[in-house]
Image (cartoon, rainbow over the protein chains, first blue to last red):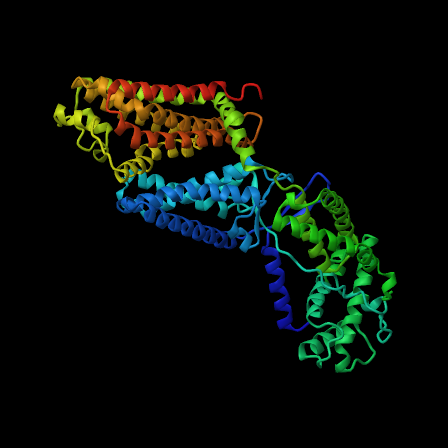
Length: 305
Length: 333
């Protein structure tokens, strides 16, 4: 592939390596992989939830003030009180009944799961949200009103904020203290769509590949090609764009395919090649020859000899 | 080789795709409407399809190189796993279990830690009381100026008496009092005593001791003016509940501290996790008690101006708490 293609592929691979995974082994014994949520996504979910609870508090406050105008004097107090009564129960109840999701988490496709491969426990949910009060909201609200604190409490507060911020930054599972105590993990649960099988089409006899043609690439290149072909289905009627032709000629050169491939056949060629390559690699894998990428030959050279 | 009928992964997919689609609709239903919305048949189907698909996933990992299929299957199995193992709790079940069994049981298991917190506070009380007796200047060492307010050694006896028997009758004033209490010094002490217990008990111990010192210094001052009995009544009505809450919160902190100090056969992380099961319950009990104390301070103390009545109300509420901790949830154990 060309140098720009390479760097794009490398970037994709780096992106892939940055993602962190957590494996749960349910009682059925088949490991289930979850992607650990990024701190950014969790922060967004948190902001959405804070927005919701603050909104609910304000609405309730206005309602109460309409009912009892005498409360006008203590409106700040009322807000603080309602906040306390709404916040923790909201998180606990929503995570308990929506299976680990608050509305904010639902919007960002996040979910709390138990780290031990069983269902979420009430205790886990309660403790992670109680600790959220202590970890996030208490220092947060003290920080807003920090002017009235003495040096001692300010120092305690700063130390506490430092610890609370440091913990999720420096552990692999990005857990808060509350997650550790409750034995929970926040993961991303997207909903991918099952697309048609690229290899499940009537075989074309137009292109024939021999075993030598298929020796060159490995799984990574196959998946990269799959991503490209998902955007360009075989029955696409528009003339193939330049990138398709470029990729096709790159592959033709690399595998040493000698038959001529006209430009308007480039897409058909790539689909045929994908099918052949996948069948080849899958077959190899069944017999224990796992080829992760195009460097598989070098690896086997060094280990076998 | 490129002929499709020879491709295991394609055949594998055509054989199972209908099951996956069906599982997906079932999961969709549980995610939006909850597990109870499933009929018995559907629930059984969910469990069966989940197991089938999980087995399918482990096969697919070996034989298929279709990335889209693998990603889809992994997520499908993950979502099915979450749907099958979703917590099956009802709100009333959780709450009643806490009050009738797990809460008081955790209290009884933590008796030692709570006893230690009680000891720290009484120690503080007697130290400050004795020191104030020898030299009233100690008062300002123990009590921050904003907490003392007009109640210092310089104040007249009449002014001190007035602080014990003032009344605020309007709703707004009472609510303000309630809230002022909740966000006050003592709540902060309870929170920190709990949360900082993780650091080997020491901060919790010092905080509880310090809280004892403050009460001791106040008691010394009022006793000197022969208002000891009245102060006792004033403190009793909410203080029995409030100080118990601080002690219980600190006891929760001590449980966590013990886990960090003496993890025993567990790793520290696991020991903390185990201790947190009880500690969290102590924190909830302390929070409930602080709320109750706030209500007592904001409303009841203003309504009851008689010291004997204050003592009666305060200590009988204390007795109620104690009998809850000691008696509830015995059979379930």
